[in-house]
Image 1 (spheres, chains in turn brown, cyan):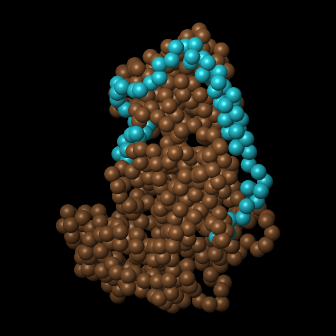
Image 2 (cartoon, one colour):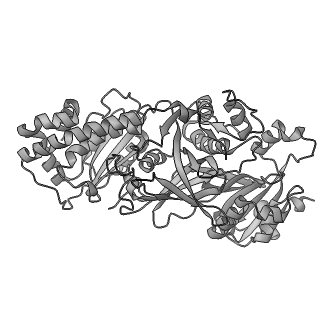
Image 3 (cartoon, rainbow over the protein chains, first blue to last red):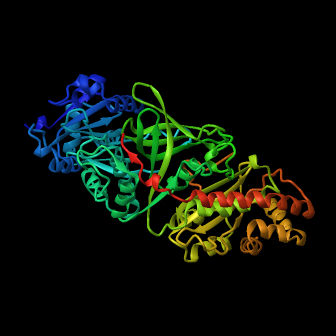
Length: 503
Length: 66
């Protein structure tokens, strides 16, 4: 009887759709589900060769949905799910059983474990069959793809641990979870990992959101307002950092990067013309060696040159498409704002217009990207006396002081500099601003992210000059008596004094 | 341009570099004159960043529905 607990099969569209189906949704209907189609393509690209069907799986997220809603339906929906595991090696029943029983040679078992690509929980529901899904990311493609919002996940196949780095995904059921709920659910997995805050299940997110009344019934859930989403973020113990993406002066891609680099998920509200407003969770970006955009903000708006000019794609958990879906960044023009271009499982291209960015941040992260950018804008006003705007790049991102110190430890900074940084008490969160000129890292500043907007944010002795010629040239102008009044006007007297003391 | 690589987080300081940069060489008087010209532009840019931080009520009321 226990042999019926699983079945190993070759990975194929027929097997995949068949085992995603159930009594409420046949394989043909599953095949027409865009998420199922996307997952089939995604797994094929990852090199899936076999799948193991775990026939009876109790999934906590689905169980709460079941207890909150489905159990009280007249139609008898199941309380248990099925789980499909995917491998890039060939497997049959005998080999899986040997793995589970510990009868495989160590190197063979390791090889199977290394070929693990992740799993999909199959919900016994009509249509919305794709439950919690944890899949491996695409390879980094020579270092350009950065999936920063990941956590180490361990699935247990009958007691055999299988590890991957991923972020859970699921499609909305539009009963207990619409896209906004799912986007938050994805994000909270990572914030739980980063800050040990709550990671509520979809039904709980929707219930919490609806404590802010908006009119209309909360369940079945078809939508959440931004205010409701912010309320949920507060209820899990985080602060909702909200950015209006319709403001033309915000470099959206650099701003997203600034948070993604620390592993913070970014929930993005977008407008899809002809369809409505949608929410997705950004999970990574593609960073090119050279600039791929001439500007990040529309012509006529202002922004200092930032690293977003080298980012050509963002990656997102989009419950209308699938996990780690690709969003091509289309630079703004004089008439069009920045667009994120994606495609559905049928290959049909559509555009997303960013409306609002919601970053669930730890309460001690108080200084914002835009607060620091104001100071960098002042400094860039001076730097343009040394370099053309096209050769300057600011890389501004959040980092924990512990991660920063780990990086310092192995660096080639002098012993004295390393001592200063490593032995001094630092705030838990920092904004690290790296200046590159012609691709060379020449200067770096650290701002205390736990401070307040009105204070001067840069830490004492945190200015790191990495290029002797640049340092000498800047120093010459910073101390020249003829420049003092103009420098103080652009930088503020305090920033000027800081730079002079730290050069 | 070069940037952070997947295996090398950008918070890992790079070795000091002496690659030749093509920096402009201005005498302090010309430098100051340029700064004076840019001062207004910088103040405007800073004011616009400040304005961009304001979240309007219609943003909070936006319904995310698909």
